[in-house]
Length: 413
Ligand SMILES: Nc1ncnc2c1ncn2[C@@H]1O[C@H](COP(=O)(O)OP(=O)(O)OP(=O)(O)O)[C@@H](O)[C@H]1O
Ligand SMILES: Nc1nc2c(c(=O)[nH]1)N=C(CO)CN2
Image 1 (cartoon, rainbow, N blue to C red):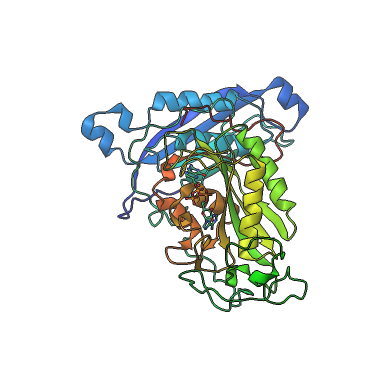
Image 2: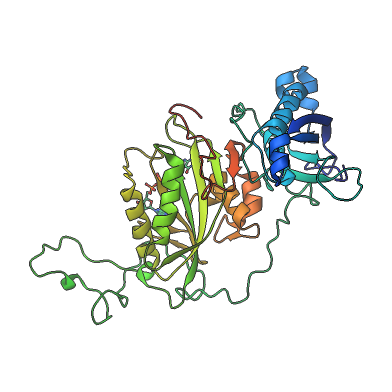
């Protein structure tokens, strides 16, 4: 394989477990005869890891069991047919990275009998994947049991510059227009002032006495800059998650529901991640995804719109961080930084949540989370405390006719 070493955080090459020449008959390919007749596929896998913890305790559990790895690789080769050996390579990478000790993996898939009309020796697709540049597919067939909660080796975002996406973002456009607020502004508490309100017939400031005369006005109408619509559409990032019911189907529907919100357009949808629940009670794994969109709604209007979508899917709030049919968070609204009683931007916990950051980095590798604690999303994903809980990503989850990730079973995870 032509990839160089993967380095540890101190810049030293990591150890490797090399498994070469695993061969099996598979049915991958775009031609009917390939699907029908099958042919030989061969895989080479190099797992990059620190083998010292295993050697220190002479403990198989602390390393990657090469026998199990070989079986899993063979299962992918013989498993559900894919058109491309690129897809097969990603599935194998996903299997290898399911081992908590694996920091990165090189996979080569050979197809020596490929239907190529000229004499040739071999054709190979070779990929390197790690926990930042994660495989965008789930392995075919059953999920490998989730890894035990062993401590992960230290992340190596700085250590493998040849493979990990550049943690420095592309320069931000100079004039990232923030039509709402001239500069990123921190609103420390609800900042009460009247603003022009788009819903008021005269467009003027909304006042408490705008309410129906017969209605009992119990609360003062309090508005702040987060109620103001932007002069131009603003880029937004939404995170969706679910771990109750038919989670994948709910998330698919939620994407459609959000796109149907007047004033909100969904532009990109991340791969679907299966993630261990973070915080709260014992609960099933989540399915999570991130949507990139554009809105003409005010931030608080957007919050209320996403909350209506949650409610439409039977969301009930019983306990903090409890299981839910659907959660939709506003992760970022342009570059606005604000903290009010009901809305914080960016979302106050987004910077530490791999279940948000990892899918976001997949759909936008150069994304930057604004605000204090923000930074390049791919780099934040690589160090987020729950990064080991991000188990699989499925690329085609919106369109695939079948469930690409088995719905989490109650108590599982
Ligand atoms: N950026 C934001 N996106 C969504 N909700 C927010 C945001 N900032 C503040 N909130 C407030 O958080 C409240 C609780 O939201 P929710 O019930 O979805 O929390 P949660 O999903 O259990 O936990 P977490 O907020 O940690 O994701 C909402 O009623 C909302 O007013
Ligand atoms: N894996 C995962 N864990 C969570 C999630 C979530 O979406 N995914 N949402 C939470 C509250 O929003 C709390 N914990």
